[in-house]
Length: 340
Image 1: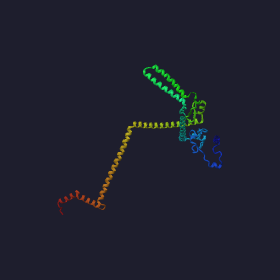
Image 2: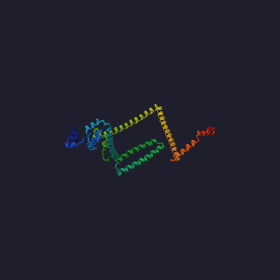
Image 3: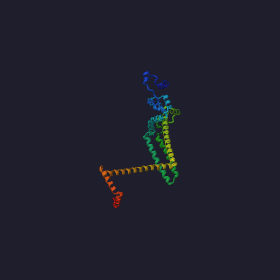
Image 4: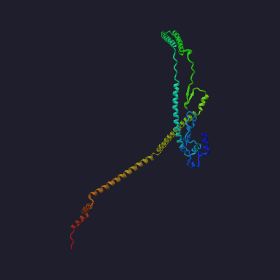
């Protein structure tokens, strides 16, 4: 039913059944709409991989439209959004694999418990007594063999060892209880698929093994695992290329600096000269400001209104000390009186 609906949507459009009033409020869906499945746009949707299997995720609640995917692949924004969609798909696949790995670990634990050895059934009283007698004989003979070996009687010791071997065979037969053991058919050993976590029969027929490998669940989890590996390798490769590009750029800058050492030194010295000139200008301005402030302070000490009287006194003293005036007075005192 879903397949037929998808085919009709592809042929006639998703709005084929809408009325005229509904078409007015209808908003056309594009590949970057929220209703569109980003997993489907990137590679595949995990909901499509496990349909009718034990790992069925149910139907996806977003739009899967081949035409939208085609328009996305032709879009100039394809590369930018593809990174975003692949990142979202990688997160979803990581969660699937983590859940699957937990099931695989639990399956291994179950198999390990099933493989524990089954203890032998208890012996009857008669068999237990026979077994004790045989073990006592074996113990005594081994003591005699050790004594003969220390005395250097090798031949006699080897003869007793043959009797010990015979008693060991008799001991094994007693423990097995002869033909009174119940007939137990060997159980089939189970194995665990590391890809999809399914239980299999170990050493099963080739046809059944091939049927499992080509099954939807095995192929689906294989695709998920392959995508995660490919995505991580691409990320690592991109990081490595970025690192190499940065190293290359740094190396080119270093070589450029080595080729032009004089220019760099001139630039550094010029920068230092500019700093020194600026410091000298600041010092000169500070000196001028200090001189002006001292001059203002001197004027202020003379007083606002009395500053002019102070200047007048200064001018009077300078005029009284003028050499021209004194010399004129001396000439007038020494010159003879003119006749009238």
